[in-house]
Image (cartoon, rainbow, N blue to C red):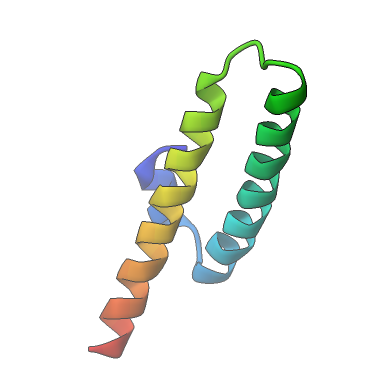
Length: 66
């Protein structure tokens, strides 16, 4: 997911997406523990996507408080 896509999303959509992505990441990590993933770099990409979304949420939170 690109940063431009994250910026275009509404705050509620971002919050829902973060919860869903975190659940998917946890499931992916558990599956990788049992049987190795074909491409383990997917875990890193998922973590970075979550971080992008969390950063945008925090940025919006700070701009509202000012």
